[in-house]
Image (cartoon, rainbow, N blue to C red; front, top):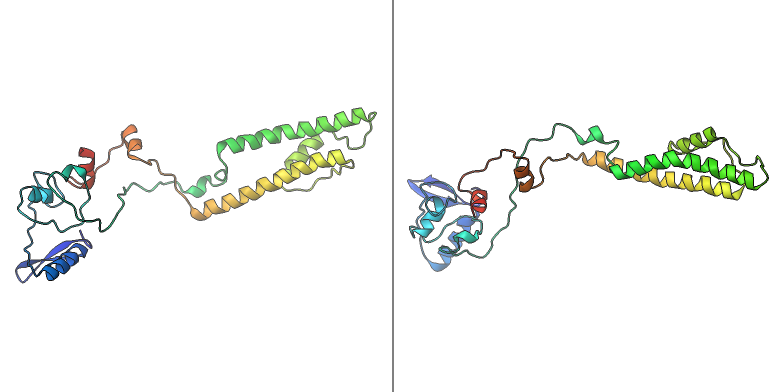
Length: 236
């Protein structure tokens, strides 16, 4: 397969082109030999009874000039040259119809993080209310830094939206509780903004299959060329 190896007919004879034939031409020139190109009756890598491999096994040819995958099942009657190149085998599938931007608002954090954030929103307001009420009780029912339940809930929600608050605690203990929540929200929103920007910039797509095991488990029909590399690998 171009650009590795291919043949063309020129002046009534076959001529080889590609990287593999360039290497063969260098060897032939150095050893002062000539060669004749023999094409397999069945195109492709083939197996022991057809294709390029069958020509090697039957000794109809001396050398296979192509970038052939190194498969151990053929080592009984073939000998590979040193590795000249490496390549990955990839599959093609239908592009997902749904863009990553469709679910981008929830993408920066996984489900566990969102659950923890929701729980914190539900419990921080009551905790602040109980803290200020208990402090007021210890200090002889003072009204300093004592807030009603609704104000504590709105403070918690407003901090998440980066909004100001009319609540201004005076005592250091109450200030510490409020400041802790503000710092947590600042760090959380910073991470969310950074992850959301990166996610929308990359515009990732979630692939339905990540391995051959996924395809087999979901019983999805798939195909490959007969007597090619994948066919020989799965046949072993």
